[in-house]
Amino acid sequence: MAAANPAEALRDEATCSICLEYFTDPVSVECGHNFCRPCIAQYWEGMDRNFPCPQCRKRTRKRSFRPNRQLANMTEMVKQLSVRAAREPAEGVCEKHKETLKLFCQEDQKPICVVCDRSKDHRSHTVIPIEEAVQEYKEQLQSCLKSLRKELMNVQAFQTKEQERTRKLKENVEIQRQRIVSEFEELNRFLRLEKQGLLDRLAEEEGEILQQLDNSILGLAKQNSLLENTIRELEEKYHSAAIDLLEEVKSALSRGEEMKCQEPEPVDTEIKKNAYNYPLQYFTLKNIIKKLNVSFVALDPETANQSLILSEDRKSARVGEVWRERPVNPRRFEDSSSVLGCEGFTSGTHYWEVGVGDGRIWIVGAAEESVSRRGGITSSTDRGIWAVNLIAGHYRALTSPASCLTPSESPNKLGVYLDYEGGRLSFHNGDTMEHLYTFTSTFTRKSSLSSVLGPGTEIRL
Image 1 (tube, rainbow, N blue to C red):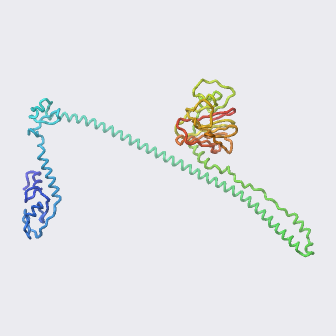
Image 2: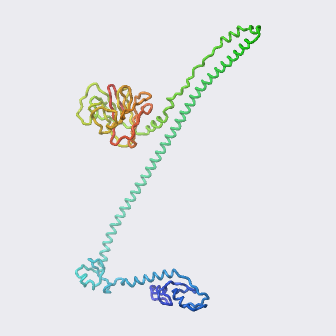
Image 3: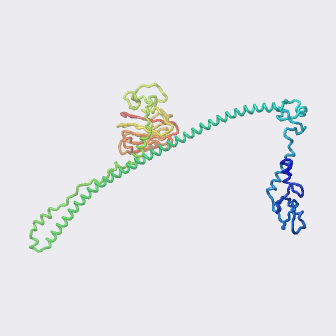
C-alpha cells in the first residue's frame, strides 16, 4: 500500500528491505529488487545455488547482482532532504515558542509570535500585525517597481537611440567608403587613360622619326649602290685592253667625277621629353588637388608690415613707395615686409595658389601663429617658418642651412599643398606642377599662410 504522503513513499523507496535503513552501495538482483551490497551478500552467505530474493522469494541459479548508481544518488538526496526537514521549523511557526507568527518587528525586520512580543527582546520595539507589514511593504515594492520600470523604459529608449546612431554611423561610413572607392576608381581610370594617351603619343612620335630615318637610309642605300656600280665600271675600264679603255673613256670619267655623296636631310631624333617627364607629378597631384577644397585665405591687415599695400579684397599685396602709418599692433611685422593670412589651420589638407609674377624678391610659405614679428626672415625652420624664396635670381628652401632649388622654369604661380596630420608642406610650380620642395615632420601648433615681399613684387591669392 502506498505511504501516507510522497515524502514517506520516497523514504521507503530509498530503504533496504533487509536492514530497514537507507541503502548503502545498492545493487540489483536478477528479479529487479534492490538491496544493500553487504546485506544481500550476508543473506546469500553459505549458499551454492538457487539464490532466493529476500523480497519476492524468486530464485536464481547464479550469485550475481549489478550496482544501481541511480538509486545510490537518489538515496543521498533523500538523506539530505530528511536532514534539512529535521532542522527547519514548520512554516509560519515560531521556532522558539512554537506559536503562530502573527506579528512583525520593525526594528529586527522579522516575523514574531505573541510570546516574542511580550519578551524583553521585543518589549521596546515597534510591532505591527504581519498583515499590515505585508501590505505596507507591498506598497513600497510596487512603488519601487514602478520607478524601476520607468528607468527600464528610459534605458531602453537610450538603447534604441544609440542603436539608431550606430546604424546611421555605419550608413555614413559605408557612404564614405563607397565615395572613396568610387573616386579612386575614377582616378585610376583617368590615370590609365592618360598613361595610354602618353604611350600612344610617344609611339606616334617614334613612328614619325623612324619613317624619316628609314627614308634617309633608303636614299643612302641607293647612293651606295650607284657608287659601287660606277666604281666597278671604272675598274673594268682600267684593266681592259688599250682599244677598249679608250672607247668612251671620257664619258665614263665624266660620270665618275660627277658622283658626289649627298648628305641626308637631318632628322631630329630628340624625343620631346617635356611631354612625358611629369606624369606622376601632374596626374597624381594636379588631379587630386582638383578634388580638394581649395583654400582661399585673405591676408590679415593687422599683421601687415607698414611698407605693404593690401588690395580691398585682401587677396593681393605689394610693397609701396611710401611708408604707411598703421596702428601699433603687437601682431604686426616690424622689420620685414611680411604679412600672414587671416585663417590658420590645425588639421586637414589644404591647397593654395599664390601668384608671384615676375617679382625679383619674395618668400612664400607657412608660419606658426606665434612666429616672431621682429627681425628678418632667415634660412631656418627653428623659428616656425617653412617657406621657399627667390632672391638675386636664386630659388631656395628656407631650411637650416638653406637648400638651393633649380626649377626648370621660373614659376609665375606657386602651388602650396599642406597635409597637417602628415606634417608635410609641398611647393610646386602652379602651372606645370613641377615639384620644388617638400618640408616634412612639421607643425605642432596652429599654422597660417605667410608671405614676405621685396621691392617691385606683388603676390596674389
